[in-house]
Image 1 (tube, one colour):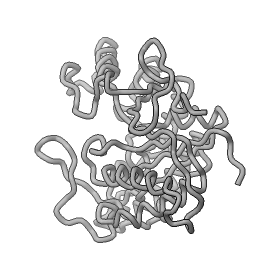
Image 2 (image 1 turned 180 degrees about the horizontal axis):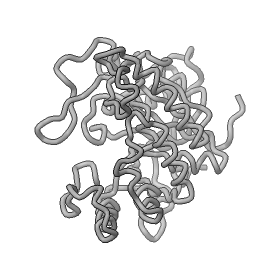
Image 3 (image 1 turned 90 degrees about the vertical axis):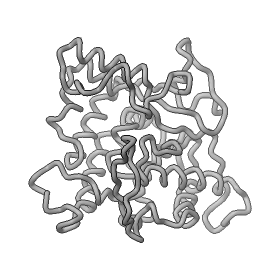
Amino acid sequence: MSLPDRRLLLVHAHPDDESINNGATMARYVSEGAHVTLVTCTLGEEGEILTPDIAHYAADAEDRLGEHRIGELAEAMKELGVTDHRFLGGPGRFRDSGMVWGEDGNAAAGENVRPDAFWAADLTEAANLLVEVIREVRPQVLVTYDEFGNYGHPDHIQAHRVAMYAAQLAGTRSYRRDLGARWEIDKIYWTAMSASHMREGLIALRENGDTAFEDWDPDQMPPFALADADLDARIDGNRWVDAKLDAMRAHASQIAVDGPFFALSNNLGNQVWGTEFYRLAVGERGPVGEDGFEDDLFAGIR
C-alpha cells in the first residue's frame, strides 16, 4: 500500500465529534497531500435527534439512528476531503453507550449500560482492532481525546483508552505479528480547547450583539477549556473553516443548522471555528512560534 509521506490518524467516539473538534485540521492536511484516516468507534445510536422528520429513528423507537448517521458521516467526510474513514471493527461492532449529566455538569455513564456498548467493550479486543489499522496506515501523528474525554462522556473516555493502548501495542515488535509489522507513532495529541480563545470569542460575539451564547460567562470558562500554558499546538484552519462548517451541517441530526453554532458572521465564524488546539501527550515538541505553539502537528518529525 503506497501512502503519502505524512499520515494522520484520528480516533473519535461518534459521528460529528471529528468535524466539531478537528474539521479544519483534517481539511488542511488533506489539502496539503497528507493521508488522513478517521476511525469512529460507534454509530452514535443514542444521540438526541434534532430533525423531526427522523424522530422515529430514536433508540427507544425504531432504533435506526445509527444507520442514518453512517450517511451523515460519509457526507461530512466528502466536505473535508477525507476518503479513508472507518468504524472500529466495522459499522455497529460497538454501540453508543449513551450518557447522563452529573450534578457537577459533566457527562457520565448511565446506570444501565448495554453489554454491546463501547463502554463495556473489552479493552484489549477493541485495541487490537485499532492496532491493525495503525500498522496498516502507519501514521506519524495520532489525535484523540484526553483521559476524561474532554467532558466525561464514557465513549470519549473509552476512545482515549483504546487509542492510547493500541498505540503502545502497535509499537511492540513481538505483539500480535498477525496484525501487521510493528509501527511506533511519533506524536500523540489530545484535542483541546483554549480558555483564552473561547473567552475572546464570547466577548467578540457580545460586542457584535450576538446572543447565541449569552448564558456562557466569559469570566467562568468550563473545565474542558484549558490555559494556553497547557496547550502545545494551534492549527490555523481559517482557509478551511467553510469546509468544517459544511461538514458540521452534514451532521444535521445532531447539530441544528439554524442553531447558535451557525449564527455567526463570517469574521466571527472564522475566529470561533477556524482555530483548533491540541495537547501533546506523546513525543517531542517541534519548533514553536512567537505565540509559544506549534503550528503543524507534524512539527519536528523527520
